[in-house]
Amino acid sequence: MTTSTQIIQKGYKQTEIGVIPAAWETTKAGDIGRFRGGNGFPTRFQGAASGDYPFYKVSDMNNEGNDTFMFDSNNWISEEVRRQINARVFPAGGIIFAKVGAAVFLERKKILTKPSCIDNNLATLLLDTSRADTRYIHYVLHSIKFGALVSTTALPSLSGQVLSQIILALPALCEQAVIATALSDTDALIDKLDALLEKKKNIKQGAMQELLIGKRRLPGFSGEWEKKTLGEIAEVIGGGTPSSSVSRYWNGDINWFTPTEVGLDKYIYQSRRKITEEGLQNSSAKILNRGTILLTSRAGIGDLAILKVEGCTNQGFQSLSPGDNVDGEFLYYMMLTKKGALLDKASGSTFLEISPNNVKSISVQLPPKREQVAIAEVLSDMDADIQVLESQLTKYQNLKQGMMQVLLTGKIRLLAN
Image (tube, rainbow, N blue to C red; front, side, top):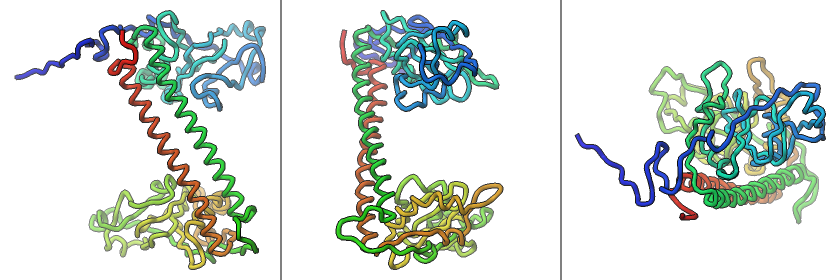
């Protein structure tokens, strides 16, 4: 029997949490800080828009601007009220997180920016800043899944005693600060891209609202648009499902789409499951041509994708095959604005569904085809810009995750001792 011995690189050491630089130490979270829970927050004191202290609840973590640092609160209290309810004041720099309920599994950890109170569904880590850099520890905590530490009771909860036993890799304070700065710089770039992406999406949304109803016309186009119904400009085609008990109907080469596959991307190229020609013939599914717009008609009504291959769908669709005078790309964008109209015409007790006839009755405004193409090209160019930004954002988000993995373990050093 052979055993393998891990070779430790010079300048590193093996610890209970893995290999770390020899100059780093391991420490329990409870040795560099204290975990403290919040206080009850009586309803009669909630809702004030100003005061001496913000009183944060779990829901405040969702507020715009509270991405890393807590700036915005839905509730404030005065010093007089704080004394009356005996609420603790936690200093700026405290790292707060949900300690009770499903919110624990969202893994949100935020940093207080001012002396604050928190309710009893939250807890705070108060650091000894002579040993620990707040931003560094904040990043370390983000690499630890608190959801894996909850007590196995009916209501998930985190114990301060358990949290205090978490083992952390701790470089010198100056190196902590350098690591935190590198990660913060990457976060700043991610935030900038995210803000630009949101701006581009809002611009596209505004353009759709104006261009698709003729409120704003592109240069060179004029004249009245025609009022039509979907049934007049497109064929509405349902789907079907072969019997699941007949194996020869399945695992063929015909794409067969379900609603869960639609709505994430503009184009769809391949289905998760496929059926055979025999399965197609023995169901109400129909072959849809390339360019058909898949439109979900059950549960998640109004999700869309343009089919880039031949295929068929299950019965959760009323797909649209554009007529000769209709540009498919234009119809796709127009249908993105019709979700409300589709929902208004849906019905059902168990789940909402819209019938083929109700889909056909949806009113639309239709310009000449040449103008349809021009509008679709403008919106497609906007989509392309958005897709580039989304790819860049994903790239930098992945880069940050990789940086965290190597910087927080010392595999790459930014400041050697």
